[in-house]
View 1 (spheres, helix red, strand yellow):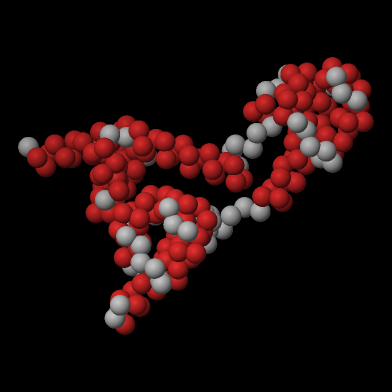
View 2: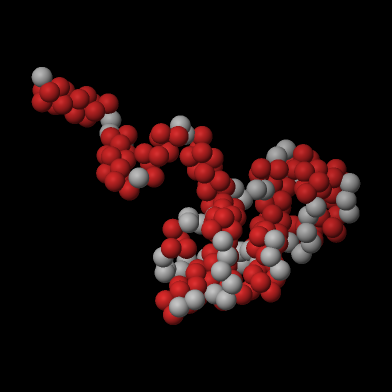
Length: 220
């Protein structure tokens, strides 16, 4: 390789590693995907081994990045991920609090609820304090005794799970759109039309009628 190709190979290696880290994948995963040894894949990220175009295409799909990422020079950076251990600890506390609130709202004592759920009262107390993890089947049983479903305890409208659920919903809705509509939405040149559609959707019927009548006056 000449000096220019050597520089390009190093940049490509950096971009491959950047896409992998952004996707949260390990080097071993990518090596196995491409059928390369871990040593050879490591050389690819250092720009010492040049992978093929089909291998790069497979990486783009696997790492969920556009092929254009590998033609440029801008890195994606490591995305900010939730602190899962802190999230777990906080959620156990919240579920314990919700369990206690539901019990108090029904007027049941710890002993009554524990007896209905078939667990010791001391264990229920540990659940309510968030000191002990509540197995999901026991949580369902406690919920039935309190007249609430499992969804009462699910954090699906706020926090990391809420954001995750909204992203999944938007992705599903987008994928269900007709191909021509998806193609229209992703074209940057069409952003103005989409913004206009959003503004129109927020108008009341009277204002929409005025706009329609004005358009008729112009075209007739």
